[in-house]
Length: 282
Ligand SMILES: [Fe+2]
Ligand SMILES: [Fe+2]
Image (cartoon, rainbow, N blue to C red; front, side, top):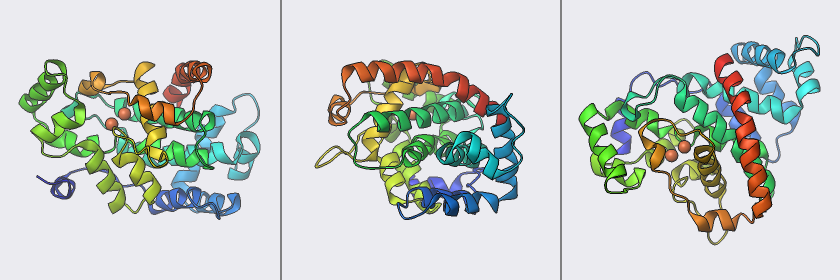
């Protein structure tokens, strides 16, 4: 089956609400100001309610956060944007993915963890001027293709994929292509294109296992590095846990100094607590 056919047959996949798609488009638009972004959040009542509930957890002991403006006052614009984006994809990414042997919220927690690390990697790298929220969004949705492919992997195919990964040292994308005919990066990118996400996010998802490095590193280089760090720091759910290969060239292209890389690992370990809180609340 082609990626398009798989996407047309997938069941129970919850697309983000139109306001979340607008939000992503706004955070990737350098012209969009904070007020415009907040207005998108304010107009989505369900998103607002969940956001305020999460903000109240995040600001325990400070005061009750009763409005989006107060949330911004306590947490800052970017943190509020990122919370809204996380909530927007929670329903899609939280279900179990049996095809990849992932229990409920396992893919969601890995996605949140990779999102946090993506923004940290961006901050430490010499990547051209880019908002951390864009990096965060790409990290959040990088493995979304697994939700689609996961519905079509039966137990015997899962066993064959495991053998390819463990015995033949096959890369995950290669194993997926051999057994299903397509890989989760390609399917994820096509799904996000269908949902109307911006090109920069689609590039990052399409190439997150084979990052686009030259002539200049693209966002996929950031997400690839963040995904590696997520795996190294314990966020490696399901059958794919052994199959993430580092592209050394990608890591070098970001110009992250060795000592800063160690700091990234520590921050990634610290982020587990935050991820657990968000996964529980969203
Ligand atoms: Fe992946
Ligand atoms: Fe991943």
